[in-house]
Image (tube, rainbow, N blue to C red):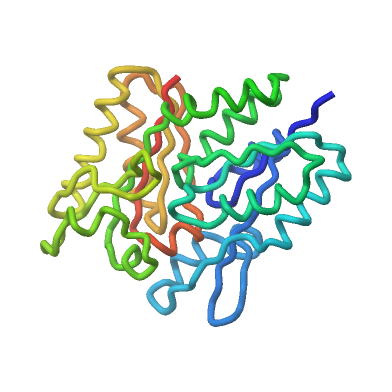
Length: 280
């Protein structure tokens, strides 16, 4: 009988209840301050990172090959026959390739590494839906077949307070050319079909940016029923206000809120607001 493991990384921003309920294997990324390493969400919190950013911006690193290899050794001991790995977009991190390389060294476990082409809870939504399919007893091949259609139902948008951190981290993607150097321009960004950042809209000032973000969300939820996730990185009070406005929109089947992983937040900076939607 097949036993399917589900693997993701800590950037997926899944809450502990979902991780524990579906026994999802989460590989933590590393947050590095001047030679001192922390494991994302294990011994450092998002708030720790955002609060410290004015003084020091850390670097990040994907899970080590040893950590991924040890996970596979454990999966073999637990008699897993198959694994589905859903990491952050391969155009934003080397985690996808690292898992693929290590999984090739463990042929006893039939592994499919699926490129989410997303980040944060956008990636997490795919992981959660995959977990439900595994829990429901669906065959491995059928689940793999369904993953692209699940990804197509995810909408993800971020309001970035500053481009400084995306530029520093080299994750600017297709954003910089689209916004120019205009004063106080706040871009709303998403990820394209290649899993690279691009500009959805640009507005002058954060208030207008929030209104534009809300209009984008409203347009989607008026067409279909959606699960909605309102996220933030170092912007808790603004996130609460955004959550309250979104809660009044039609066709929302469930509404969640949470913090964006510091491994992602390092590259976007504080003041980040994000909304993800999953068409049901």
